[in-house]
Image (cartoon, rainbow over all chains, first blue to last red):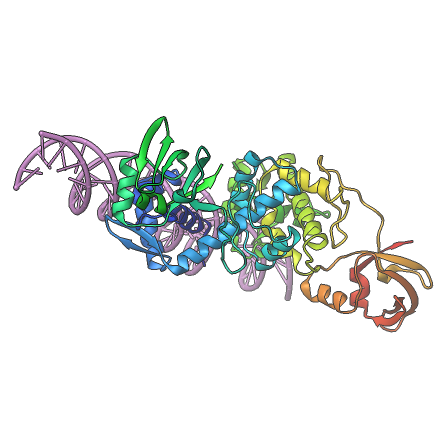
Length: 218
Length: 218
DNA sequence: ACTAATATTTAGATTAGTCTAAATTTATAT
DNA sequence: ATATAAATTTAGACTAATCTAAATATTAGT
């Protein structure tokens, strides 16, 4: 049987590892869960033992399929409860998260599937994040590559296609990360490069980069 | 801050001490919570320390006003969630209890008061038990057991005494539920069984059933 | 390549809740 | 009234999750 704490670790690791980078490191998990790195080390050993993730000393962790399954299920529950709270119980978008953090751990297949039906099978939560269906499948229609963006529109960076460390280091080095707000200034037809602006910085990225960076319209 | 385990102890003590007996004894609590007497002793010391109850060695415990307040609040949450599960999510009588056991511990004033409003301030849960309002007040109608009914009178089914899934499934199977209109046709003095009629069906129920089904005169 | 800085792990302690087994108190039965 | 049974408490140990401080490994800068 999985404990509540284990669920929270798995969820945090899922969110941290969602886009790109192969391994999630100890400090990141500690920060996400507001705990200490040593506690994280203890827990990931246990989770590795239970085969929810693969752990390489000093390197980090990656969720196994088993671990990912747990994580997606929690995400599904969290987001469905958020829809319920906003649509039926008059919660505002900023009030839902804390309560949903607790509701997401209630374990009942019937409860969550009936709630899903009661809400008429929503595909997105109140923050616009996709809700996985009963089988764990996301409906991800609203993310586009930077190469498909439109000039002078504003986007949030939501992920990458290429997950190689080369590409990720490039993004890191240029201070582009998840959540970075990007405005598209110009698209050069000659070489398909794109000029963007973020955090008061302007830069030109190649077609290669533009094809591998996912955005969501804000 | 009160822990989940503490809440469960307080709730169990509340239910055990509800009718009459001044003090609730250790073994009864242990049985109710499926734990050992020694664990109960440890916990009641802690709860006494925190002033949720008064504890006299070898005698037993009584909830303080502070403890009772916690208990009533949990009962309120439990019963409101039960109404939600049955009315909105198609749960049957016997399925609600287990899930409500978990939902009752979610701590959010707004959540429970909005849920109350969403359900239109119900006074009774699906088993006919009264739901305390925001201020902890119960609305108690005078219900009688089928065994105390009078021949040829007509009643509405308003609740059950025995909430075991065995009994609830028996009722479900025979299409007897909250609100079912029942006419008492005959009471057999020999074995105290009762012949009733409802929805054009006639049937004889045992004394055991008759004692555990609550009715209200229409 | 080597040192300094940073990240991670280990060792040992702590807290909440639980348990078993032994000791103690209260209740019961002749 | 006193022995025995039943209920309760104590003592000591265990597990899960956490922490601090020290040790070790990795990364980055020169």
